[in-house]
Image (cartoon, rainbow over all chains, first blue to last red; front, side, top):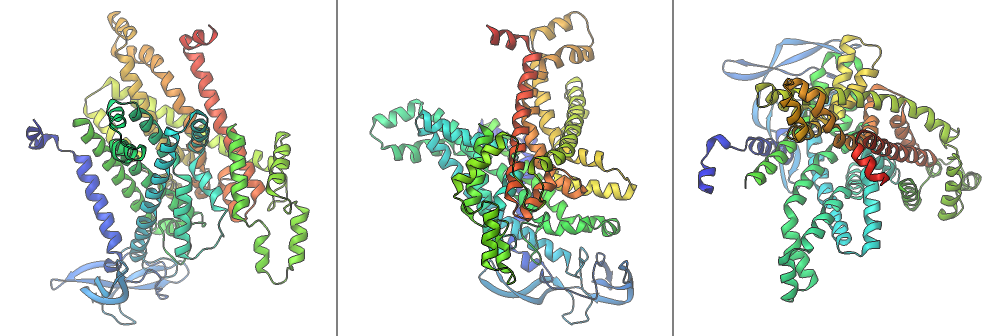
Length: 348
Length: 288
């Protein structure tokens, strides 16, 4: 029966496959952000502020990038400088970084000749300060993919702890805990997150900002998880196999960790995958509003702040909205994954 | 109860975290420690937290939410004037989302298992994955290219799109349930067309479970309005909250928490009342 299903090609779980693949690309991007990025996220090229995306072409079978020349420094319009093509090189040397925070390297996937007046390759153009938008986007994705899963993990653990406690507690404590939980769920999460934001200083260096975001996400994001865990614990406690475990003398902690939690893990993990995009959006929103990760560090939110500049938005809409596209793709990936998991559960 | 809980938790957490509207003055060498102490005293910030909360609560019961540190005006009038813009936008978004979801759910059930139904499913999956920050900026781009001067409707649509998927799922599920009920079978037996059966009979039965969702979604709208208001420069509660956070204006934040809780509570209460109105069975059960 199960063999039949696994070779049935018509019933492939496409949402699961596509979602996993998209998420895999995001994770690889985050891990190898420094390797893929041709420039440091903070490096400014004053000659090329608000430049358009680089033009890639082929000459004699080699990929080249065409240089640009600014024609009007006020409106910052550029034209292609045909006299200055530069060969695109692969695995070039560039700025120094540590892969995964350990391995010191200076190799980059692609780039141009390493000279001061060299033609730069800005795949997504540059921002107001002449920083390479593609490199910044990679750094931003990495920041989000470190902060959000950590926050989601901690919030989930806290939620399961609170929910389990509530599920085991007496009537009064249970009512009190669930009262707070329902209050947190019913209020708009962004308003709660903003209120919690006041507890921290306004301007923060990147590492402190990351720690703050994780703290805020943990303290505000546990409620849905707690309600789900409580319900599941209550339901499981009354089943026969738990009664059997009790009779055979398993200690309460043993029952909880060895019998109840493994049995309710699946729905809890599904819920955790829903928290992840919510945190990514919250981080983007806070940084967009200027109270999350602040300049010069790159985040999806603060990169989008510059899209409020209407002249530039008109000129290069896709470039300015590229962080927004990354956000939408990430949310879609997690949604597909979630759909796929549900479909898989339903077919088993 | 909800409001009491929210305000108490916010108040004590913010007090425990330390820092107030004047703590940033410490960085200024021109301002002496004594001036700061005097300022804090005049705003009553030198008293213990519990006393402060009780006096704030006493005021709140008579609609006096204190004075904003930043705007130097009463919080209650400030919040009330800004709330109107947000409420109007949220209601427009709600109406839009409901209308679209109703039409789509009708099409999905009327032409079930057709290409159209599959297409709707796909569009909804993508639109549900579109966060408001993305929709808002895309809306801004549309407003800029079309040179639209009034962005109200664009903002409302950006606010509404993520809701459509949730509404549609709910409408669709309740419609499918209603379609297998006896009264729908009776209506079909009378010889009504499928369209008439859905519109006149099944919808009425399907509305009730969806009303709860309408009430609950109000909270999400208020949260989403923060980002939409920031993008379109709308002077509502959301943008007020951002200002309050930037200026560590705690009385104002408390005021916004109060009005948000009130709005969420009212949304749930209205949904419950509508449910009672719509379903006579519930009403008789209550009076018995």
